[in-house]
Length: 192
Image (cartoon, rainbow, N blue to C red; front, top):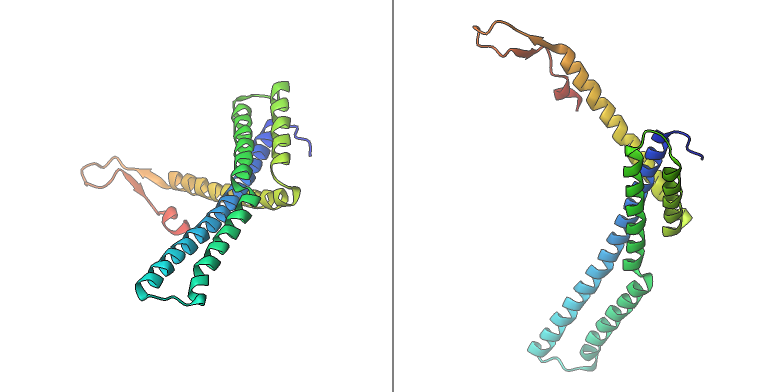
């Protein structure tokens, strides 16, 4: 969809940058989970080796357990290396950085300039090559829902602030010891 207004470009860049953040967050969680698994199995292997020595276990099955656990660790390590989490996350971070830079440029512009359009298109290209289309669709959907929710909450907040500001009464009676900024009601107390 062609963006003809500067505000549309800004909103588009925000949603795409947030989508990349969501993708990066998911990759990091997945990578962290595999690394935690390796750590736990490594500790279990060490614990089992210590127990074997302390208890004097010497049968064939007991000797195979550390080998099996070490093989599991090697398999998980190979799979995580194959998944190449660090490289994927780095590509996403570079794309996110380009989108953020273009977003900052767009926020400082008054109109859509040719240089802004060039940066915008470069950012889109980088986004499109950083994650697969099916993943991009899912993360963009999440990002759009998040932004809509944020804007709804922000509107609700500012509407309530406006309501509070309209309800403030200024009192000239300083002798009564009352607060000169007295309100009839407190809409924020019940609304948020």
